[in-house]
Image (tube, rainbow, N blue to C red; front, side, top):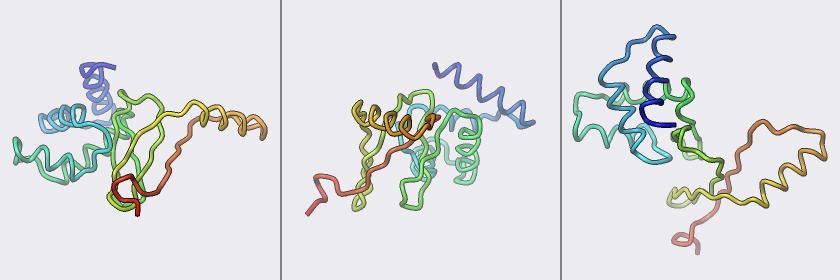
Length: 144
């Protein structure tokens, strides 16, 4: 999905919710879409405050939650107390390796794991709607 389509979707969502489309929300959306994956509220706020010091932390927090409600972002909790967000538009299905020492998050795709999950679901008469695989351990830099 293009940035223009994402912006249009967000504006339509705001209108449906009876909320205003503000310049601050547009700036936050632009930065979010170019910011990469796994952004926390603090990560995005720190990126924004350099150019836009009038945008507060609470505004970034509330706007990221709106992105998730709208469906243009996915909220992720990797067990470290921070919610991180990924753009739904840019996501192909992927899983995560999370370092419990430094917090590094590595995305990966493994077709054999996907096939095995489907096999297990079928064996139990289960239809997969969505799933998430997160593996916690130590990255190459942090392992003993």
